[in-house]
Image (cartoon, helix red, strand yellow):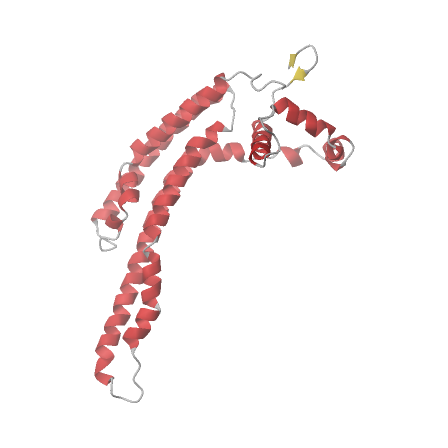
Amino acid sequence: MIETNKYKIIKAHPSFVKALEEIRLQRLIEGIDKKQKSLSRLTLGIARHPEFKNGSVKNDLIHAPLKDFLDDTSGQFQTFSLFTFIIVAFMAVILFAGLIYVMGLLNTTFENVGINNEINANQSMYVNLTQASQNTFGKVNESTQGLRLVALTLIFSLIMVNVLINFSIKQHPAYFFIYILIVILAILFAVPISNAFYDIEQTNIFNGTLNSFTGSEFILLNLPEVVLVMGILGAIIMFINIVKSPNEGGLS
């Protein structure tokens, strides 16, 4: 705890700081504040708010077990986010490629059935199966082609989340070395995943569909390098947050 002439400054939990950052950003967006308020001003506002000062929030904090409020998985998300990225990226591309291949196969099969059924065109019970296939499986097959873009967008979103999450979480300096170890383990984990994707692609199990996932394919084939870059960027951001002055954004 740091004492000043008028205030006692305590180190807040990262999740509380993140919530305050979101509040003051939203106040700027909505035009409530013309300039960014300091975190100290926001905490003062919370302390003076009726729901905190005399309301249910204060009573809950007094009487309820603290474990009800302190159970938090945000740290777990940050710790395992690199591994989550690797697994989700791999599974998404494989599943999406499989779905595109299966729908294309079904569409082609039913169209062929319809073509073979053309010999019965003059029969009273004739049904145009080709047209029926185009109106059903054909439409679904066209829709599934967009999964290539979905996969690439998902992967890029995960990359951005993994890197930018370090902006909003301030960690103890000791965690920096743990983070480096986690990045190394993630790189080692990415190697067999990348090799597995290459082997699946070479077997041509989906008749070349995987090759059509151009951007996603490049990322998965170079997964260890991608994870390394993500880890370096995340480490830089984390280091900047660690060395930031705890008094930044003083009372204004």
